[in-house]
Length: 213
Image (cartoon, rainbow, N blue to C red):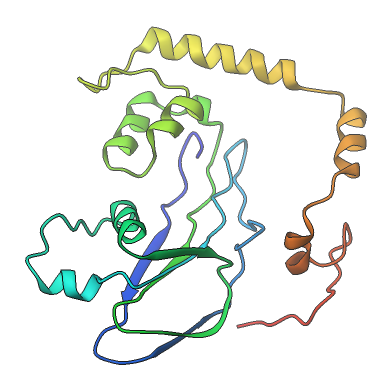
């Protein structure tokens, strides 16, 4: 997110078919700690989860009339979760077999970093992003602070300005002196699960073999 949004992430969804089993593995960064960052107040993109599902009946359903099966990524995930066993796991995965009809999702990219403060984004362009499903309703209301009429899709300019001014005041209220912030921040420590992949804290020295692809 940002005054100008970074590029959208990319996704491929593979279904094992007419071969058994398919062996899959993945080596990746950006799984637990996002390395890409925004500029001048823009947000970083999200980290990338590993997604897979078993026993989905996906091949059987695609071979039928296909009614009610939407292939856009988010509705497809909802469908897979409702009709199979969905696993959300670390994106870098060891080799494992997938059987006929199992779904392997590859989230190749979480997207690019934003440029500029999201509160400076043109409200009309924000709603264009909502219409094309590149951002969510939650993002429009919470990140960009854009007020609009869901029925007409029209921006409420006055309310948008009020919400953005309110958020800027709240940011100042949340602000602290640098020495206070750094003292608290330096005392914080990520969960051990993340440090498994990061290394020693806070130096970041490897504590396990590093595998590069």
